[in-house]
Amino acid sequence: MLPETDMAREIAQAPDAVARLLDEERDRFEELGRRLRERDPAVVVTCARGSSDHAAGFFKYGLEIALGIPVASVGPSVASIYNAPLRLEGGVLLSISQSGQSPDIVALQAAAKRAGALTIAVVNQSDSPLADEADIVVPMHAGPEKSVAATKSFVASTVAVAAIIAAWSEDQALQDALEALPARLAEACAQDWTQALEPLVAADSLFVLGRGPSYPIAQETALKFKETMSLHAEAFSAAEVMHGPLSLVRAGFRIFAFNPPDASQDAMASVLERLRRTGAEVFVAGQSESAAEKGHLPMATTGHMLTDPISACLSSYRLIEALARRRGFDPDNPTNLKKVTETL
Image (cartoon, rainbow, N blue to C red; front, side, top):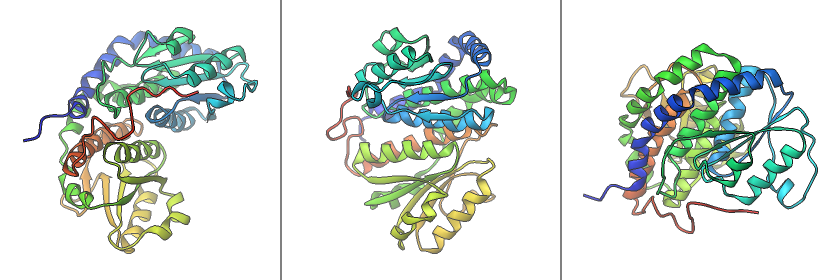
């Protein structure tokens, strides 16, 4: 039997990390929600890279759906390389980083603060340059993460931004779903997705699809396929895949999709049915009337459209860790990558 990887251990630690975050930062989220309601910004901008940028994309969908406030991602190089002046008076900047050390992320936060934005940093390392300079710091409480592939820190960051949205919008249903989330995530770790294992062992390329809040989760999943086993995976919105990318789909092409129960579910199902008609092999994380349905991957539902994708993401991490080992890779030590990437 192969030894347990750091990635596997850290996936299993995610439910406890989320419980710590929600318990220890309860008052901070409440206060942050009050401050954001008082500020009432016309725009929110985000700054992040890699997995953290997928958490920022998740925040974008969540906030725009919950409150209708536009959220835009600003490239860190706008400040760190191009030294462009920002116009963010009365706005909000949300930065997300596991390490809080990347110079370009720190530079953009400083530029946003000079431009009049309230700066919020969601970080795992609270003693980092990004945390030191932020107006408000939200620690992830994920604990040390040894595997290069971020798992529990990504889950904690998505829960942190969901908690910010819940406090800001005063959405009781979302707050209730967050309270119950650690137990649901424990269930997510136990989901059986092994039917996808053997078909994906032979894959040399695949699409990962999502819609709405599940689209950034699809992006994160595609990244994990790439970094843990050098498997070419591209993420698309289920709406966008029906344009140019559809021409790449052939019989036997693998497609991995997230379709949790939200307003996009029927539209997503229609897209997936069309993809099946091309002969593609489709695996879908979501609900099904028949658990034995070919390609169906069961998910632990959580009671809210914003927390369901987080649950599905954690289940996908377990599949990816197992698949990487099955394909002969060490998911803790991806080729050419290191844990902390400091870009300018």
